Length: 139
Length: 89
Image (cartoon, rainbow over all chains, first blue to last red; front, side, top):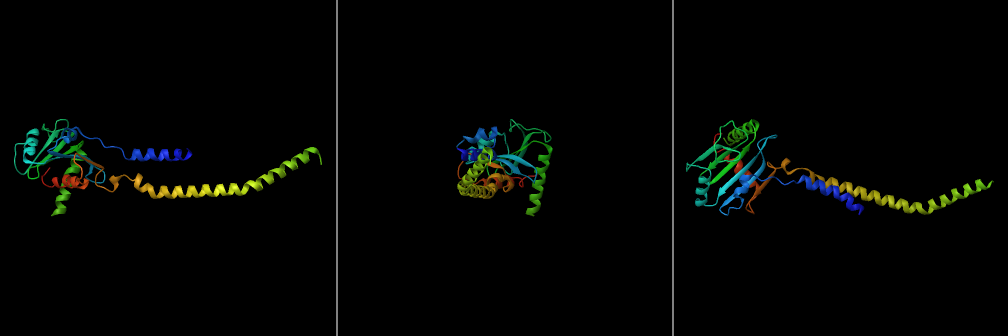
């Protein structure tokens, strides 16, 4: 019994250190779809101090991709389509300075849409810097 | 010697004889407790880095969830990273 008392606090600490990440409504909306693979990255590191949550929707076939394009009102059919989406309704476009918002990017060749949840200007700037740094490194 | 002195002497001697008989057992218990404590401290020292250091300190993300099994978490992190280089923000 005494031993259990020693172990109990340790178990509580372990349980607390592995808290479950919250799923976004965007993730939950597509999680049950058989033709769409959806992933959510909580705390995608943009630099040492800034992280954003990312939701990725990947259509498994052309029909599913057409459905996704209709869901988000994407008219283009090649290259990359990007927009700032309303945090509750990502389909709805908002101005670039609205926060919080989704930074959405649809890559037609890959049949993927990635949504980066931007809560403030620091995150938005970090997102831009991340891209610039990565592009520089690839040169 | 008064009765009180005799009584005190007897008490002291009784105490000494009891200590003599119980000391080895007490010493053994103390040694065992110390061994257990040392093992516990060593175990915590070895396990704690795996338990208390959050994965985000070693991974470029905190947590990944997906509606499909079998896809490595790193795949999605790479996708999220690569897409950012495909378009000017």
